[in-house]
Picture (cartoon, rainbow, N blue to C red):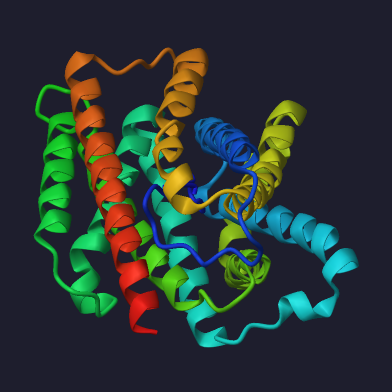
Amino acid sequence: MHRPATGSRPAPSSPRPTPQIPATKPLVGIVLLILSAWILSCLDASGKWVMAAGVPLWFLCWVRYCVHLVLVLGLLLPKRGLSVLRSVRPREQLIRGGAMLFATMSFFTTLSYMPQAEATAINFLAPLIVLALAPWVLKEPPRLSRWVATAFAFIGVLIIIRPGAGLHPLGIMFGLITACLFAAQFIATRRVAGDDPYTSLIWSGAVGTICLTLALPFILPTALPIMRELSIGNWIVLISTGVSGALGHLLQIGAYRNAPASTLAPFVYLQIVSATAIGWMFWGHFPDALTWLGIAIICGSGIVIGLMEWRRSQRSTPAFQARA
């Protein structure tokens, strides 16, 4: 899930702010979304790599958010000015940033115990959790189709984490926690829909950076001895987590500014391909047949309910216009 990734990234069928400009280039949007999926999968792999090299989780997240914030500010402030920093709902932005920070930390923890493909697949449960809870958290009408889709997706997750799959129990636990945290992030994203997406991108980086910087006195005593021994290559990989996080989310914003969410929704699931390919290339992990069945059930549930929601919106729009 932003993503989406990896730690900070959106996931399929998740609530998103309405694009600020008309979506007129669907092919461009699809290409940008696929590129963002690969880049965010690289972010996940980079985090997994440096944690295996001994980098503490808290320090990894601090570097990831600091580099993200510096890069995004450097790209956006010269073009958009200070106005891009202003939020109409700052309290909700703080909540969203906090949810994103905890989701990032939880997902990196998951990756330290679990192969990347399986961890990414479990994340796709998050948007379906949002749909299932929509009557209570978003005040939307209850719909049986959403609950059925969520139930099927959870069956897919159970197939992936089945006994005998060889997955670490802590990885499974943190994977499910991550899905819930990403669901909370998507709900918070819905509540800041009035803000410019670039404003949300800056705020999410700022919340993580400030919180982790305040925690540095507790982080550094453990991290410094390890960081002194870290190779130049691992330092480059560590810094790249912030670069890939910022770039991946900028590409996602570009994708949704060029194509409608209904067009892009099926392509979000291609992140399974990028996560699997990278996991196979670097660690030799490749899901077995039963795991692929679980992945297919999760992705199929998301795609089907996404199409149903889109058709429902298409039917309701003309009726609304007629009443108007």
